Image (tube, rainbow, N blue to C red; front, side, top):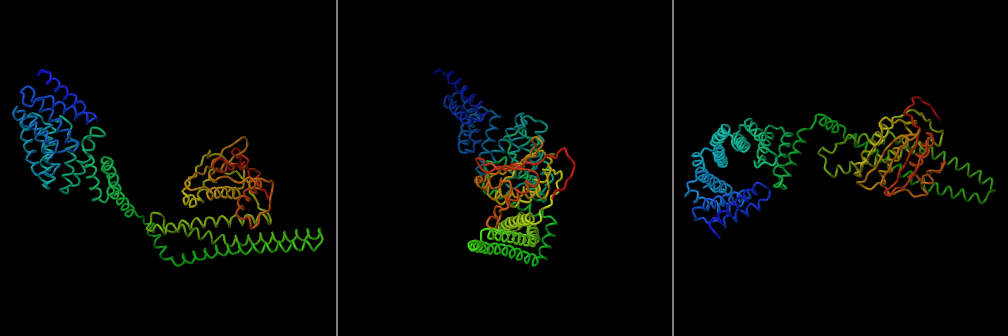
Length: 569
């Protein structure tokens, strides 16, 4: 191969490497620089310059990937050739590169190389190189703790750059000025230059490590006790250094968030803590009363079961001894008395327990929330107690309403109701149950839709259907509540993922009327109330099993365009 051919091949290979060096394909750039060195002869006068240039580019590539030993090796090969050719520009570049590699290896000789680079760059008319080399020297002085000297040199570098901008090294210099001012305690200047570095950054993903500027700003805000802003800067710092995030980094962010939460305690919380401290004994007694009342209700239900069983058994024995007609008459009378007694008893129990249950629920809501200093175990017990109290309260409400419906009837006041507000109120009342099972309640409907119904009975229907959906839905599933108009009717749909309802239960609920509710079927009392109240509001409903659960559809008279009120008994 002729000499000119090898020169041209080496020259072309170096140019290909330069092209790749400006892309993300750094491996290809290293390959072609290396091939260029192999093609060229370092001792031939016509090839040695191109050999040295290829070796310098290869050294730069290794420096960018933190392979400092290899970078020094190829820079050392290029330097004697540049010195022989008296190529001042490339001598300065090579000295600077050697100094940066030594700096990465914490080699004290790095400052000598950077000083030599400054000496040669002063001899050429390239302000960007002069500014860059002085900036490197100022950075190294800062690493040595010579902050005043570092500030002086960095300001000189920035002054040169401002007079002769050339290549955009402004963010690099400004960032290090901010760091230097922070080290000498001039926080206002440090913040000014750090923000200027970020603003002058030419593009997203710049070569300039702006993460350091954000870290300086973070430290300044911590010093100024502006924790909210400090957290914003810390998150930006890790955004630019995401590949270096470690467990300790995340712990630093979490620790700052905790610190902010502690320092932002409101005065209302302090007053509430004082109130809780002064009433601690009273609150403890209220809790004990609530537990006693709940226990009494459970025991009463357990006692009623065998009494009803033996009573019915004795009645059936008497039927065998008496005539058919007389037995039927006596049985009917006894059953009526029993039902009235039972309904009255349930009414008294639920009414007398209603206020204490409500007080217990209100007191539980006064306890500290999730952001306060309760242990995880205490919070778990508190949340479980809230869920139990809501279940207990709903059972009392159902017992009371059923007892009323079986005695003298319930007076319904039908009026035009805004459906959205009723749905929101019912969902809000079940928030602890929803949160306890990590459910998602999704609502959808026109906020202007109104229907014709009694508000109290409608709330009971929606509350029971939503409570059942929450109770039987698996954790982390969804409950859909939507409403719309169809012809002259307002339609409410509640759909869950709870596995469906047996056909015999659906048939019982959709029957025209059924008063056969006993203590043995208290768990179905809520759905029986729903069936009765839907009918009393001149509505009807359907129950359908879906592939995942159950869909309840309620139909009432549409009142969107009406504005009158009627009373029905």
